[in-house]
Length: 193
Image (tube, rainbow, N blue to C red; front, side, top):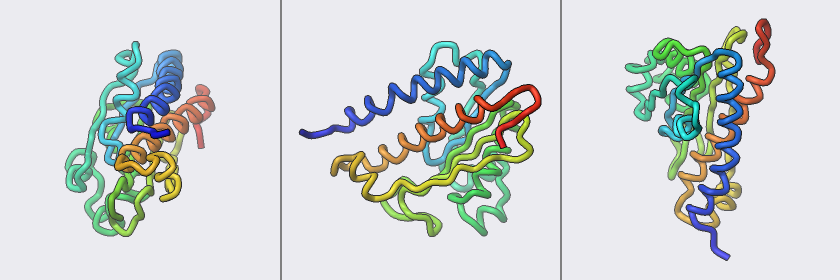
């Protein structure tokens, strides 16, 4: 049995739609707004939100800062951080998530950076990702770090050439899941950290 990239997209899309819809409903209830800063996911995270009816009530925008220079010019990521650590690092995603909040004046910010391949970047292996989350009540951005292993990538891509797409879609699913986890713990006086 072969497994096409369309099969992968369909297998991941419905759970992402379900989680994104829950996030949107939760944000609507709490009167919160959402923005994204995307590098690795290149707009897929924003797409996960805008696919859902009612997203315009809470989703204010996304900045796709794929090039390292755009992280500095659009999101105000410190050039020293980019030179010292590179575009794929926890400190970089912390600054991305803070910058997108300033840019869009949102109350919830999510940022992604990582390596989709085919080769490593800034000394980081293919499959490495960082997700930054900043929500009301948090004193600092929470960073989720992970790596999708070569075996996991091959298993998802089923030997196909869509390794990059697999990585990007898995990171969107992780970002949505982590954001929902944090939103579930928010009260008027309590954050996620």
